[in-house]
Length: 203
Image (cartoon, rainbow, N blue to C red; front, side):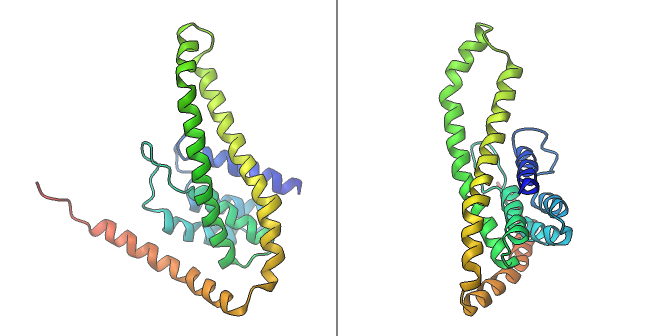
């Protein structure tokens, strides 16, 4: 359990790279999946889930006020569900996608909270009651704790719940999810080809 908590902490740190610091692409699903897979003892599982998730999130960019699903959390949660809770890889993948989508709503609430606090922060900065560095550090810490708390919910509630019902899932659902999982790369590649082949609009 201690190892899983540490992995969640690493995942929370990697997720910060999405928009809050660095932005050196260590939050990309393929990187996160590989790192979490390596730490959990199954690098190739993490790599595969990372690649598949990457293909889904290629066109999702967190620009401006847009809060897309978290690709970092999607790939990380998928690896955790497969490695620690015994979900088949095709079920773990979709649980990860749902997890990344769910966190986007948490992210929206965090941004609303920061927006409400802006007047107070501005006043404190003008009166030298705080410093810009302290404000940035507090914001990063809030994001880190929010992601970590979200992951704790996943491993304490969602993971055991799916783990307990996975053996009772009918065979036809296994076939459907397995087929859907192996279709994902083709959907992602088709979207990538469309993006590259799109011609700029003429004035």
